[in-house]
Length: 172
Image (cartoon, rainbow, N blue to C red; front, side):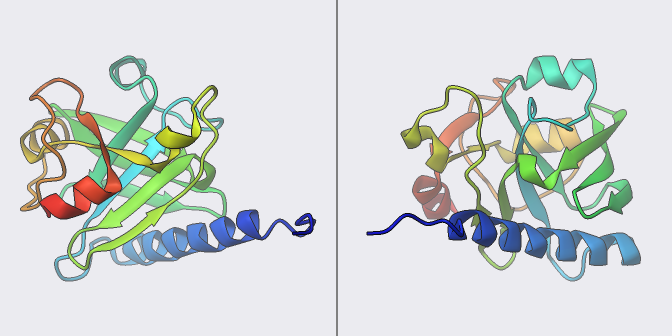
């Protein structure tokens, strides 16, 4: 097989990030999510351009999953990323997340999922197909949001657990 000088893999990931950009742009324009839609967005906290409080960075030094559902504010979307206000343990926080830092996007209301290869330092191949999933009780506690989904079975307060996406799908 010849060498891919066009880099279709990168082009395809950029196109799929455009799906996230389009969806978030529409949510930002209306100020709410339509129907039962809500999003689990996993991103690398140490990726270039990510901005979050030192407290959250210390709690989630590698990656974090946010739930965008009922309580969010100031959602702003650009060509390169988005910023959003969320509440963590009743503390308002502003996060800035470049699309290149997003590792996973999941809308459980329609079982739609995107997964991205994101460089994370010394991460190996087997880990690139994993996503951090937080139990609903922890998501409710940290994000002050309600979700009928149960994305994972990590220990409460333990920062979640890493599960394969196949396991994640089987639990929903």
